[in-house]
Length: 351
Image 1 (tube, rainbow, N blue to C red):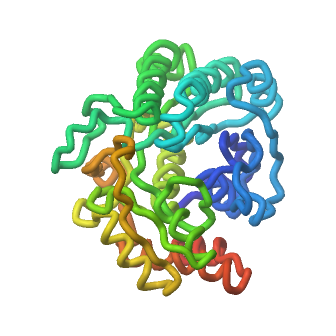
Image 2: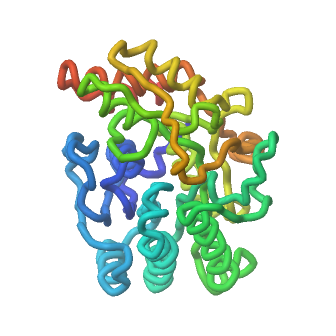
């Protein structure tokens, strides 16, 4: 995984204060990239971004403000953009559907418009989700060519983001016109349920478990039988960086959509995650929530990652046991010793 191409490369990251964005910033900082971040201020206390205390240029602005975004990107003069800014929570999208669509869909349109008017930009990588697919609760993993959809507002908005990216790629950044009328390559990346240290978002399984454990409480679990493609945050980020490298090298065959998830046999239920998590920290306790007011969430979901494995040479490195072990160890270290394991775990993963 040679990522030397990022050394001294100007990289623009939206959503850099979020869970995945902060890990991405840490990794790119380690690669000696010149990072500019554009995001709302961190939304939780504590949060991974502030704990890392990275020395990078940060602009705390809203992705929905097109004019400010345009000016910031143009002034930053980036060569590659990683777009992670989003409203990322399913249950939050039921409460605030308009804001969810504004942030996720119009935010992406704003990003594409701003990049379209910045001559330095050569690569755009848009981060969406496995939930962008029309979920038929099928046993086989979804492929990049499967239909977009989404039951809840969040999932639907991410399906819309994929359509926006496809439209801009066809209309303004068509690969058939690459190096003739433009020099921009666009890819979208779809990851599974990403976990790891430093996430304190509400209504997510691991953060909910950790918050309760830190107070000596049990966590209410909504859907213990639901299955998800669980993966450590470093897994999809390695895929994003490898894909960005190929696009920076000008290989237009890597433009388009990509899945990054665990191996099919590693797709496990919420209940199995709970059992593994409690194995690594005795304070973790949980009980099933029985309520007729539960909002709809997908029961069965997995990704087909053949394209990334065969064409990009990417593959997941950590199985469920290691993924959950490293995640719980991160939080246990933070709460019991005030020691941040982020850089240590990143080095371990790279090595």
